[in-house]
Length: 183
Image (cartoon, rainbow, N blue to C red; front, top):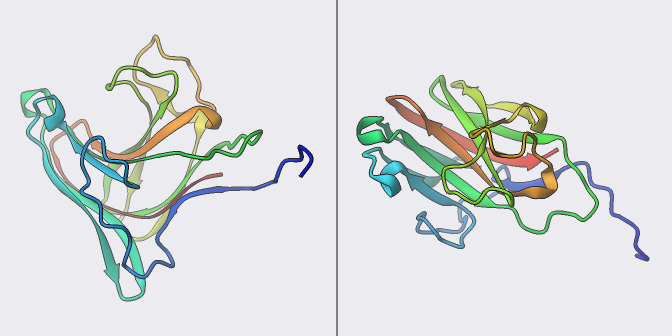
């Protein structure tokens, strides 16, 4: 290849559109090395309850996270996240594209980068998950940092994890993810 870059318009992180429902079965817990990790605010003393699983509707497979988000005891989140590996050298992406449906509630995508050291640090972009499948593009320039001392912007080459999060208020979460990619 003599130092040439392969040009790719997107970087698929996970795509269940053509899966057969036999996606890997992980024990979606903190510190797993499987594709997705399910985490609740119980890691910090919260009381939110939820679940994360692969679902199949006919020939269509997708991920589902559902549960009760509770702000009691200083909690308030459910999350499933994945690690980004093998980012193409020399390729910058401008955003995150997801295909989701939900229960007409607001959710967020959280990004963690190599510059974030504390577990409560992230960059966030919110979206509404309607009851119909929809493709949502979230430009990286619109992600908000969780603390003032974080770098003010995000570069795609620095992303280490991406998460879909139900956060910040008491509500019943129910969200499906069909695919997620950098664009």
